[in-house]
Image (cartoon, rainbow, N blue to C red; front, side, top):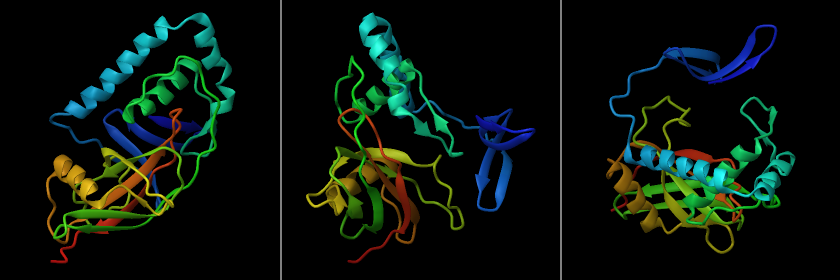
Length: 231
């Protein structure tokens, strides 16, 4: 649950007491949180397991190693959804960067790195063609590491906020020249393995974000696409 306090609460986002608080283009909304029958998916278990390993690793670091992460807190400040600057603790920074590195199959860093300027990650168009068994992602993508590809199941018309619905499909490289991400056939296979093959006319969301070699990640770029069949 993320809350921004004023003389009264002025903004809120997340779950609290069986309700979900969000902010949309029309203003703040509150809805009842539906019961999830099986929230412990294999993917969620893997995430929890990775964070557990990183927590254990943090305890095993030497004092100079841990101090390097604490000294790096100011260099890796972030901006939250409210536009406020947030500084992670050294331990949180260690876990955050190394978790992202684990996604692209890199081992954890023991000493804090120097930050790297992140480049552009912006999807302009996605063509989801079940007839050609391809998902072609094009846009502006600067060479900066590996790209995580995101996707959703079919989404009803009118729903635009899908941040909590996207799931990681896999990791792909950007093309030389920075105009596309991944091989269209590979991305299609990743989507089908996660969600099954969609029907023509389904509206889904596809997204990307980049992770560089030290574990920094860009903001996600996500757009909606209608599934077609050109055959």
